[in-house]
Image (cartoon, rainbow, N blue to C red; front, side):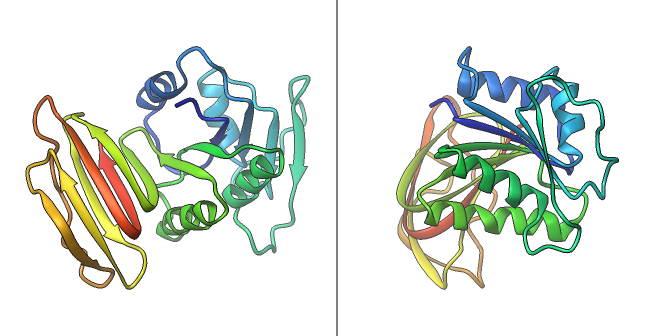
Length: 214
């Protein structure tokens, strides 16, 4: 399914894998909206992609003064409630996007990485499907839903975001059937899709699903 908005953020990433991932999800269909959050602007330029909006307080890079034609700048104060990534996502939702592909957002500062993961739940609460990835990790939130994970040669983990949820895992090395996951005991870590198969993750409740791709 093509993503409607592409959002470049700070943090670590693998540029090659992110470029391939964008092709995997969107093919030749360009995102309706492209945004860069602060230093994510450099990531966009590294892929020769020109964003429609550059958003942030510009504490991790200097405010760009020579933006390309058609690119708008949104400058936020440094003292604010939302992170730059949240501001970019909010703008995308305000512009009518209901599916977001967020590049970067992990690594570097642990607090920013964790806040981005938890923010995926807020987006889900507002009916927005979001995938956070640095190219090597793909992170999404499921609520009373299923997702199919192809064999990408890596691992996947499922962790409850609420006090507890039930999970069924099929087509994987460690299957589960209506297993109770508790937030304080995240044991469903480092599972593997069976070679050449597709795994299915079904969540009743709210959980974060993380894939690590080789």
